[in-house]
Image (cartoon, protein in one colour):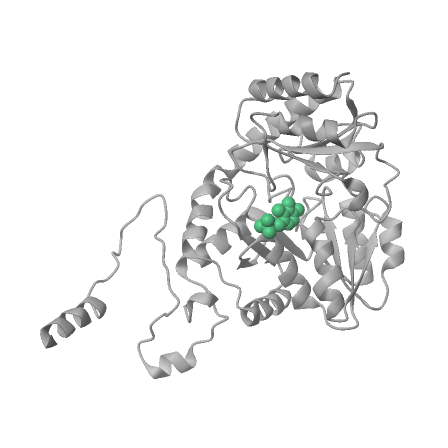
Length: 403
Ligand SMILES: *Cc1c(COP(=O)(O)O)cnc(C)c1O
C-alpha cells in the first residue's frame, strides 16, 4: 500500500517539462486553475494584472492571452478581456462603468438582451436607461445629460438592420465626454475598424464588445465574448470588474476560437456574398415589402454603411425581409417551417443558414417611420451554395405565400 502511495505521488509530482522548440500551426492548449510559483516570495510579488506572467487560471493562461492578442490585432485594439458569452461582454461593460444614479443610453434597435439587462439588473441597482433613435444623431445628443456615463452603439441594428451614422454618434459622445461602447458583433473587426472609423487614427469608439460566438467561432458550437479597448485606465476598470465577477473562459473553447480565426476573413466574405445573392433575389419577389441589408441602396442608413465600410465594403451574411402586410403571421410561420436548408435557430456566423421570424412591434418602443408595416423575417447565411438556398426559399415561398 505504501508503495502504491509512493507511485501515485510520482504520477502527480512528475519531472515532465513541456517541449521547448516544438513549433506547429496551432498553439498548445494550456489549462489551469492552479499555477505554480517557485517560492513564497515569488507568490507574494506576483501582480495578477500584469500579463508578463501567470497567477491563477481565472486571470489568464498562455492560451487565453494568445486569443486576447489575436483579437486586439483583428479589431485594432490594445487590451482585451475574454468573457463566457457575447451577452456577458455587454453586461461586464455595464457593470464596470455604471453605479447607482448613473444613466446608460441604448439604441432602440439594440440586441434585445442588452435592453433586458437595462430593464432588469441595472434598474434594480438604481442605474437608469433611456432608448434613443439610432437614425437621428440629434436625438442621441439631446438625451445626454450629467448622469450619462455610457452610450451603447450598434451598427447595424440586430434585427431591422438599419445602419446608424456611427461617425456622428461617436463625435457626439466625444464632444460630451461620455464613454461609448460599440456592440461590434456584426462588423467582427472585418467590415470596419471600430477604433479608427475614418482610417486616419483620429476617431473611434472607446470600447468594442464582440460576441465571439458568431464569426470568430464560426462553428455554432462555442459561446464566448470579448471586450477590447485602447486605453489602459479603461481596460483596468473592466479587468477589475471582470475579476471580481469571476468571469472565466474554458481553454478548450478558447482553442476552438483560435483554430477558427485564421479562416474568419474567408468565411465572412463567403457568407457576405451568399447573403447578397439571396437579398438580390428577394428584391424581385412581390412578397417582399422591404429588403433590409445595409449594402443595398434602399435600406435605411445605406450611406452610413458606405461611410465606414466603403462603397465596395464588406457586410456580415445577415439580412431581413419585411414580408407584405397582407400575409398573416401563421402564413409566415408556415413559410419558415417549410424551409429545408435554413434551420430555425438563434445566433449566426456558423456553417448552417438560419431563419427567425421576429415580432418587431414587441421589440421597439415606437414603430420606426423608416420601416414598412409587415412581418419581419431575418436570415443568416451559412456556407451552403447560394443556388441551393434560393431554391429552398422559392419552394417554400410558392407553397405558403402566394404572390
Ligand atoms: C449574439 C449577439 C450577442 C450575444 O452573444 P452571445 O454569445 O449569444 O451571448 C450580442 N450582440 C449581438 C449583436 C449579437 O448578435
